[in-house]
Amino acid sequence: MVDQLINHLVWPIVYILCITIPLILAVAMFVYWERKVIGWMHVRMGPNKIGPLGLLQAFADVVKLLIKEVILPTTANRFLYYLAPMLTLVPALAAWAVIPFSGKMVLSNANAGVLYLLAMTSMGVYGIILAGWASNSRYALLGAMRSAAQVISYELAMGLCLVCVLVLAGSLNLTDIVNAQAGHKGLLDWFWLPLLPVFVIYFISGVAETNRAPFDVAEGESEIVAGFHVEYSGSAFAIFFLAEYANMILVSFLSAILFMGGWLSPFPSSWGFIGHAGFPWLLIKAFLFSFLFLWFRASFPRYRYDQIMRLGWKVFIPIAIVWVLVAGCLKYFGWVTIGTGV
Amino acid sequence: MSRITHYFKSLLLIELFRGMGLTIRYMFKPKYTVRYPMEHIPKSNRFRGLHALRRYANGEERCIACKLCEAVCPALAITIDSAPRASDGQRRTTRYDIDLFKCIFCGFCEESCPVDSIVETSIHEYHFEHRGENVVNKLQLLAIGDRFEKQIAADRTQDAAYR
Image (cartoon, rainbow over all chains, first blue to last red; front, side, top):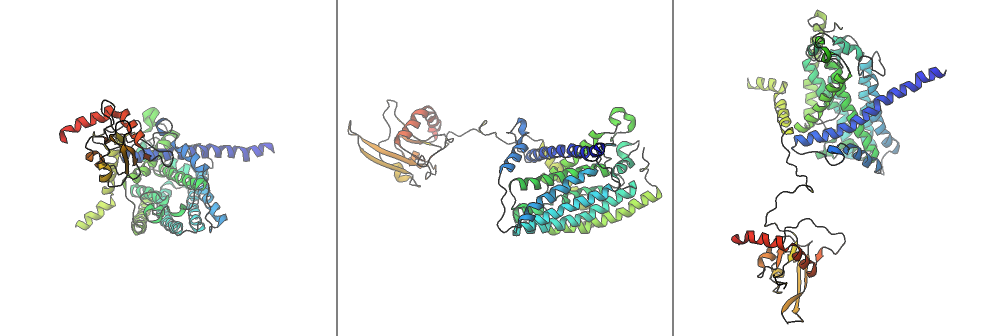
């Protein structure tokens, strides 16, 4: 009885904490890194006062946000208003349950991991819509509607991209998908090569899905102040912030796992030490992808809303559909040597 | 034809990659930031900052209460009262107030002064903590002048050739 309790309750909670606490710390450091990188690209220095090199800046911000009052607008729907940040954060954290960090390190090696991920990332939009609606503010409502339309449009393109991966890997299990990319050629074995257009579309859709620049019309400061979270302050705002950044890191990890061979080494296995697969490789890849988010933000101006919709529906979805067929042919006729596994 | 090339150019994201190349180059450039309280940018000797009233070398105050500065001040920031001095009957100011909130730091008072008494020093780092401190009186102005006379004189000498 006690054994069962420990096995089914205590250990899972310990594992969950082992994922979420580093994740939250990673979000804090990511916020700091974002401000640094964007500062450098603007030929500024970024935060450099609090702690060595400004490293503690994010923690100072967290303390500031937690001390602040959470203001409830008088006409807001109290229950939904407080529920919305939770509804955004919970899927953002829950999605991490199926992410394999290496061949053995995974909280839940679910068979339909990709399906679960799709479900979880789509859940986040409910939090955004509720936040916009419950605030009883025009700006928040407009931001929420924009965000919802955008997330749903790009989810389609993203789903089609995932279909290509699934066709080649022949599995919905994320560990199997990575293992299907294993081979002797290292970098050249991964799915990004046969699925290059789809890979690009996937990552750009991921940027749009997390409402990041240049697709951040949901919080377009110039038109609608800050969009769906304009009425939120203090810790409630901090939760939205946390969810947004956790989602960005999640998309980075997913791109690394689905297209860039996850924890596999980019070098041929015959190269000795650096040819070994391992968790650090996944971290490096995810870091590079998350850097792309910041790079995009520093480089590109915000898209107009109709341009975003046009890009999603008229460009990405057709290309993705065509590539589903291409991927099917590649698999059916065996024109690519991937999928052999090791 | 141009439409087709444009189509492929936009499809291959060439312009976006060029933009990203630009930002990554800027990322490694030396930064323009001046860490202000620790670093300062060079200041001109003509800088117009906090006001001061100067004295002659023998300790006599320069101001002769001609009120030209009060007359020329476009912001009406200067208020002067004058009376014969009790000791020797010379005309001197009994009150010389500058409201720093009204002052626009145009430097007309300094230019109008026939005896180089009222000057604007290069001090720009000062603050007030209570209401009313924005009006600096004659004693304070003289004290500022006494304290920074060396700097004030040096700045004036450097500029003398162009006056």
